[in-house]
Length: 445
Ligand SMILES: *Cc1c(COP(=O)(O)O)cnc(C)c1O
Ligand SMILES: [Zn+2]
Image (tube, protein in one colour):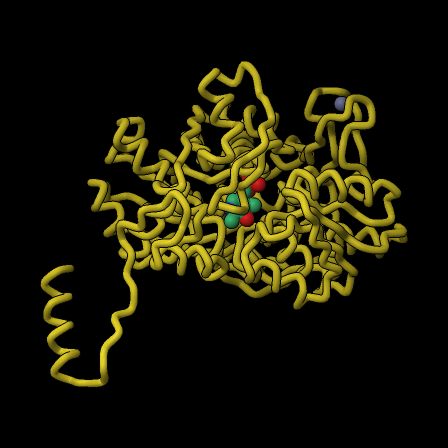
């Protein structure tokens, strides 16, 4: 086990290398992002089959820290960290939801939704944050002078950071764009005793401030430019394939903003391919809101150029990002995985979420973006109805009550709310109530 090792390296190909306990976020030579590079030759001391057996044997177990869906794959995540220093809430292990009725409405019968929102803080951000905060905890244990952790956020990153930091007893500071996140997302870091800074700017503006504030290295930067988070998030691919008995689905659809998550998804598949766990590559579809679509604009020009934009307001507030930090990693992933980028309007994303809710889901707006992309790509025949498709649901719908209520009250801008369903007011009179029920049953079913 101890001969496995990993370090940071520059994604642009400089031969810069840094240990994982060094406080560094970008290449010191060229300024590009870093990635965690694993010693693949060392990991080849187990065959693909042996890795599968090892991960299977730890699933559903309780032995610290392998009960976590992330740390179950510790050798592939951060091999060199003391188990006692790991900060975990047994994240991951989220269910694959067979979207039977929703799939049937599109003529499909192999449609699945990976419910990443069924997690401690209600979004997939927990997967990356357990790794980052664990590494910070390990660094403090090794004597590094880190006083706090900080991030800019569209809501879910700050919720995850403040929870994991509070669990470990590490101070946290979060920078949020004023009036641009949901009430639940704002209350989460407040409750976990983070220093919550509400700035009169957008996410990209908050990102600039947090980079300034963390420059002196005493406050550790927890945004996804910090590639430790990608290591946790990449376990999503491995977990999905494992849940299908180590079979690779045909298509995976994921909503993207800062584009760390799609990069992580690709990295998980690449490691499984390199280490012989799988042979097939899935097609990766990245879904963006039309109001915040810089990658879509680049995609239709074959990724020949990329231009940051100032995004418009979108209901999918966690992906309202115009200048994504991980764009280069994301483009590399999409090139390697037969990638498609699709976009969804406010009306399309809201209706897709509502339609899915009517088949038993409870979708956040970002999941709505991914489902709308699915509907459009099936219509365009870029996705076959026979394909096994997995849609990544990135957060829990319960975090987005304003979106849900606004939809049903029909007061969301740019949204027609075709599936609105408001409570029906009536006097407490059994005959009247029965009459209404008969009418409604006729109308609806
Ligand atoms: C962060 C987030 C995303 C986008 O992930 P990126 O890595 O920024 O592309 C999508 N949906 C939800 C709910 C999120 O919190
Ligand atoms: Zn470099």
